Image (tube, rainbow, N blue to C red; front, top):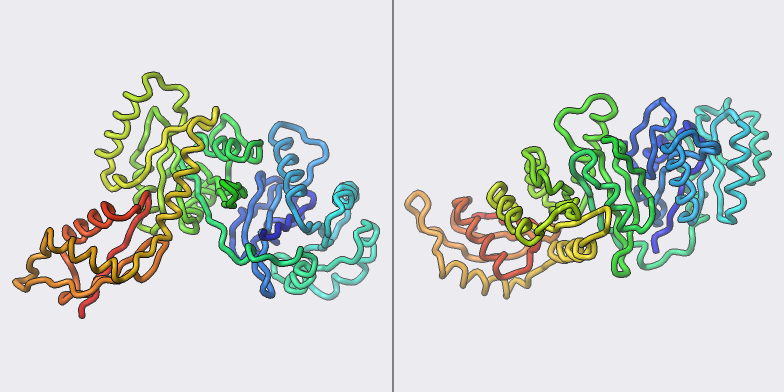
Length: 428
């Protein structure tokens, strides 16, 4: 199993900056205001041949003042429980809360790496002996902002990881859960996990960054990303949160669009769906709040008909009616997630594929382009995720209606559930 490393410390010591540095990009939103990170954030790191999942937390809060701070404190407790190794982060100024936090970390009995942040030069490395008073052993001074000595830190961190396993080398499928603000995305993930791992609120905009959670389904691990509510007009930190949601879609394998039964598919949601498919992401539409509906069979048929007519490009996408609040149909949703992931990995042997194409072409000849009879000479699958097929022809480009015909025929013969397929043409 791939190891988990959690960054722990009081608020505003630079945890998200260090997280971004180690995962190699601006994955967590960084702001000068404390408590910008409110849920856990997760990224994959590879160093010296070892891979691990790095968890960014909202910070240790000893005396929560409101429900939100209580939830942040809970997130940090859960991250500590899950971690195989803890990075305990402080800055140049030791505070009483650092000693309290160090005491909590020591009691876990887990390997701990003490890191002193904001040490931007050699001069600032002088006179740091007071950090031994945290009773966490040796420490390493770094600058998360500039990257100074973070390589040395990673060398030490890797030595603390559990022994490597075969599973560590396998990529973990990523599921992006997207939708409008307050549509039930966080509630859905909490229900799948079985406890409140994500902060939820009736107020829209509670989730401000894309938040990653590891969930096990049928003995397999997946990373679910809860995203900020998508809308066309955002300002300030909301704009960057929305941008992060789009980036999360780009880095995912499957997109689950959560929408409401009262308004199943808005214009902006159609745009998100189209963009996801164009980027080669598998797709599932989850219609939430189904527990509020009467005469479900009749309503489901009408909604599916509406969706198919309103967005015909989603004809191959599964539509699942769920209740994130009660858990209704979530088992079917997770089954479909596994189905579309399997569809992404379909690889058709070349001999079988060419035999299939002989039949497809015989039923409907490609016709002529600029007076020239079109011939498809050979077909091969060049990659998966999404499945991509290369057609060798006597012309450079086939008519789009014939490409659509080929795609429809492939879908009738193969289980490309919820997964886009790409058809490329090369002249030969």
